[in-house]
Length: 400
Image (cartoon, rainbow, N blue to C red):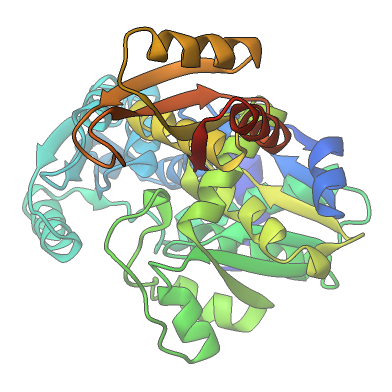
């Protein structure tokens, strides 16, 4: 894959998907000390950059290939992107998904009239079945990342960012199998070689990081909030490009990515999935490295499960001390609980949840323990509530 392939991909897909905005975030820049620009790929129709590579591949099929159709193995954004543009171009699409794929993702893919087949419980098993079915039905296999046509399509993100961000100095890109960063690095190093290209992976799924740095990391449990980049094996086409053109690879933790999702939703009013927030998480993890540098972040996708989003928001409120747990012991007499809640109301602490316990964790048979979840303004209000309760004779403790 060369720069010319990416430029041709841009001409090929022009007008058939969104030219996504790339805007400076004044608030996040002030918070991190970097000069941050956000590329909103989560605003594509199927909410991810995957449309670029899928469409570029579909548009290069011969008439015979297009008539028979394509097949892909994917449980997420690539599946929706291929199915959507396949329907739009009247190209039959078959998507093979692991059996554990959430029903919502299956339904979202079937919306575009793709044939969805559930097979296998592990990546290798599902991929082997997909390859076998492609050969049996004579379908073109469109790999989610390890295909030069897909890589070239993803590289068009970089062409746009170079034009949209004046004097760009560094780009941070989330990395799973490497399709996005290999395409982007090819474009950037050809047109603006001084721009630093940095990949970001989850600490639990560090396959490219390990190869890039020649290390073995601890990894972690096989679950992550950034399932879009939870790839165990980098691509055969992508890895050589990453080794040659990418400047560095970083790791981020689950909590850092969760906070990135929270910050982007609260501050920029934009919904990103875990993979989309990894680049911002990397900036917060090492603010000194990016301070005063004009930095582009790719918000690569916005397909986040609503149950996961709910948990991320609740956990974010806890981290910012806007949702806290209070434990307080009160006398086990009529009216004691009402007096406690009245005090909390006077202190402008909204009670979200309350549990009254007489048996466990109390100092006396004549006492009871109340556990409350309170809505607060932040850490300053917590100190005010603890001091006020102590003045009234209550023993209270807070926890996150």
